Structure formats: structure tokens, C-alpha cells
Length: 94
Image (cartoon, rainbow, N blue to C red; front, side, top):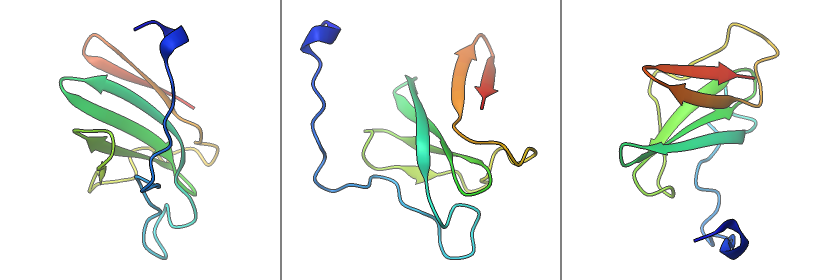
């Protein structure tokens, strides 16, 4: 399937990943995801209020946030993540 045949379909049960509980690092918003698909799994890095979190999904609809989130919070400007996997290393750009 070429890109010219690609079509987005709005999922009726949005959002597929929600804000965290009140008082958590991602309680105000979850946005700007970067998703890669590998080894039969979708892997998402996303921007929360003050850090970057990680979630995974088998189907791209039902997401499970990593229990040790956030995965990156050392820089107050950490937002809009982009991840590239090369060899044995994941590179996080923000």
C-alpha cells in the first residue's frame, strides 16, 4: 500500500491514552506522541506536563503506561519526544 492510498479513520472511543490521575506528572495533558512498531508491539513516548513518559500496546488502541514513568525528566524543556531505534540503542530527541 503506497502513501497515496493511506487514509486516517477517526476512532470513536478516543482518547486511547488518557491523562494521569490528579497530582501526577501527566495529570494536565498527554500529547505529542512518537510511536514506533517493532517486535509485534507499538511503543509510544509522549509528553506529559513536565516530563516524557512511555506506553506500549499490542493493537495501537489499548495502551499501558509504563509503571516507572516518567522515563525522562532531567530537563524542564523536555517535550515533544521523538525516538529512533538504531542497533541496541534508543535515541530520544526532544
